[in-house]
Structure formats: structure tokens, C-alpha cells
Image 1 (cartoon, helix red, strand yellow):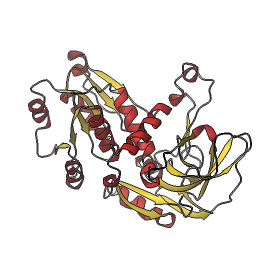
Image 2: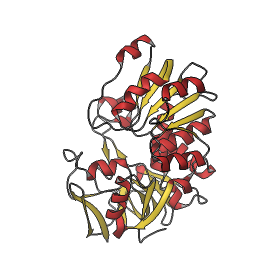
Image 3: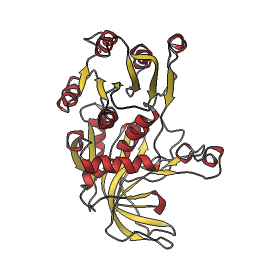
Image 4: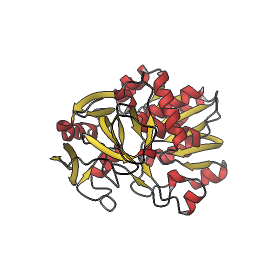
Length: 340
């Protein structure tokens, strides 16, 4: 079978891999679609070489169907449509003992610490599977993982109906956060510098701001009648956005740090002190977030078609990464030859 491997900085290779049967407690998935994301780009750019083992089969956003059920597995049948929550935890560390499995102190992710979905068949522990409703298209279902990220982020921010929320960064996760916030019943402004992305976001019904041409602090003050945003989500990963967050949020408001910042950033701690702000970290998701994400996609609350820029075969994955890195796409899906 074909596999897409990270083999070195900015280099992926299509290779033939050995298809092995699922072991005890495992299910084999015929992968239908895999989404490419910012974490995959971080890996390709060499930022995670201290963690990943090369060659690495990439991909942790996926959908597919059950192809084979291993020994000691109950509740799954060949042909079941599924997605995967790509986390494995040790159950023994203090975080796990406190019930915080998703931030296990030895957390591993499928597609980062073990082979991922950019291959035709994938064996995973049966506990990572989530069933998909039959009416949910498998290409849309490949957005479950990033949608679950957004659900978790919004939950961490404790967003309430009627609030006014700012999302800094209008990439796929930013749009997904905005969509989840809207489903909660809050209003959203998305700050994004790229004009093409702003057009896409505006067409989805969200208010947008270009920080290069607009005094964003003044605009948010006007929008919130002088109060500031209830919650600000920092999704861009830019140092300037971290500083802007404390400027845009209201007194006793919350800032949710969503982006993966590769280096330490300057923070206006005087503003945090003076206005009693809360800065919140948000990492991955819990199973309940995945379940909520499936429901959002099923209901059409997530603009899946608008987010999926294109679908390519496994053999064109390298070119797809180049396009994604250039900022010319929202979400690119890779289609496996075993599409369900």
C-alpha cells in the first residue's frame, strides 16, 4: 500500500508500506480522507524533529470505514463509517489520575508520535474510534478533528450566548472557532490580514477586520460599545497578536491561546494585572468535544464545503503541502484509494 512519509526538513516521500492485520484491541481502517493542517506543516518545516521519528507517516485528521476487526474487539463491524480521536495516554501520570487524559504528561498523537492516516490502511486502538452517522459525508467527516479542537477552545473560553468574541487569525481553526461561537449564540469578529481569506470569511456571514488598514482596538471598542471583547481567541501564532489580545479584551475578560507558538512571546502583564484578565491555554480535545464536533458537522453548523479548498490523491500530497504553506488554501484533503 502507498504511504506518505516525512523523511527530512521540507521533504515528503511516497513509499510502499507493508499492510499488516490489526492486532488485539485494534481495528483496521480503510482511510477515505485525511486533512492536512498546521501541525503537519510544523513537522515538515523541521520544528518538531526533536520529537518525531523519521520516516513518519503523517496525518491525524481522518475519516474512513472499518476494513478489518482485530481480536478482542467488540462493537465494530466491517463497513462502519468512523473517525479517529488520535490520542493515546498512559493512564498512570498525575494528569491522567486526575481525569485529564487529553493532557496526559506522556501524551502521544497518532500521525506525530506513531504512523498516521496518510496511507491506504491504518491500524488504531479500538478506543480511539468514533462512529459517524450514515448521513454525514466522509469528506466532511475528515473535519471532525479540527472541529473538535474548536469545540474545546470555545469550551475553555466559556463563551456564552449574546457575548461578543474576537478571533485573531482566519485560517481553518479560526473559522471553525467562529462557527462554533456562532452556534453557541455569540457574535464574532475575525481579524485576518489575507484578503482572500477575509472574503471567504465574510461570505460565511462573519464580521472581519484587516489590522493593517484599520485601528483594530478602536474598531473593537466601537463594536462592543466601549467594553472590549468578552473573549479573544489567539489563533494566528504571531507575536503581535499576543500583544493585541490584551488590548482588545474587556475588563475581566478571557484570552484563549490556541496557536502553537514556536518561541516565547512578549505579553503585556501590566494589562493583565490592571484589568484582571484571564489567560487560558487550550490543547487538543476530550472525547465529548469529538462527539459534539460530529453533531455540528451532521447539522451543517460547520461550513465544510467552504473550508475544503480541494481534494487530491495521495500521490499529490507534496504539492498540496506546498500550496498550504503558501497560504493559498483553507483545508486540503488527501483522498485514499480505499475511499469508503
